[in-house]
Length: 101
Image (cartoon, rainbow, N blue to C red):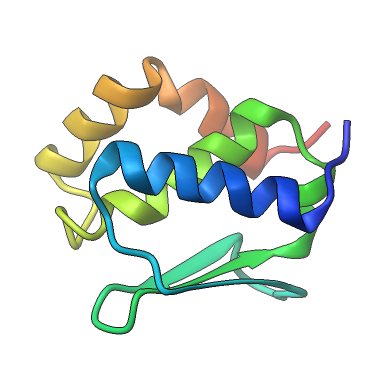
């Protein structure tokens, strides 16, 4: 477990390409209250540095979660169906973030 920043950024770019989302800047830094944030207008994605120590499925969840906000600004039906389409049972992964072991 654990990956470097460049490997993580490569993963983000692969997902962005797959989801057809334009990403201008990827920042990885310490965040107190969030795992990530995305500003669609500027194409700025910020990820919590703690993700570098998490499992691949958790990283994918956070990346896809943020990128899908480009198409679905809230967590409504569209966002949920897109999450399921790309990650399957994402709620199980989500619970790992809320209750890390």
